Length: 106
Image 1 (spheres, helix red, strand yellow):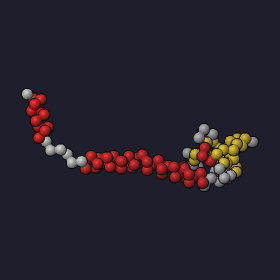
Image 2 (cartoon, helix red, strand yellow):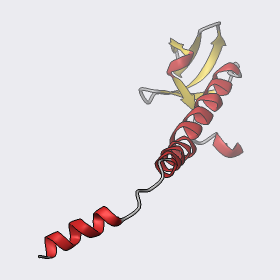
Image 3 (spheres, one colour):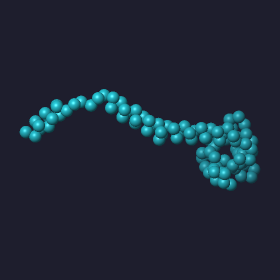
Image 4 (cartoon, one colour):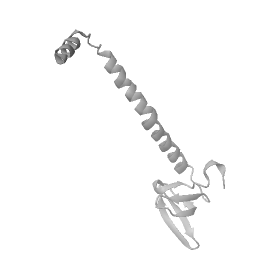
């Protein structure tokens, strides 16, 4: 008897308008953009700016974890001194800003 009552009540209820589902989907997309896409694109822009502004004497860290100082800047690569008399050529895309330099600290 309870099942029959539940089914009759469900049949008598008004269906929800279709636009409410659309509002939830749009809201979900906006939240996804605010928390995932926007911050990632901001970090990518900052990283590209850092790579474009590289100059001789800057301290850098490779994505492999090597710390060094730039001795020469080329179009797509830089020469990085890792130790006395050890200089390697590294792609600019393989460099990240030295964490101790972030925020103006030395």
